[in-house]
Image 1 (spheres, rainbow, N blue to C red):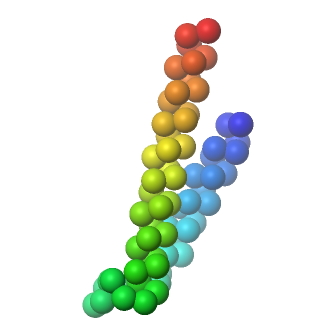
Image 2 (tube, rainbow, N blue to C red):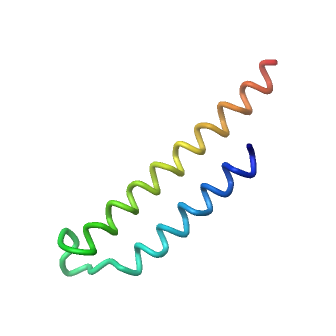
Length: 64
């Protein structure tokens, strides 16, 4: 499970990198830039959720 979480985090970081390259800073909310912003925000949410899962698993291990 640990490797799966790290793999998901890695993929989210890759998606962020790809999406940053597609941003048009002159017009962020139109076309591909809007899609790239959505992917960046979604990837950041995934990273936060995976962090929460990692913390909750470490707390569960200490509790048992």
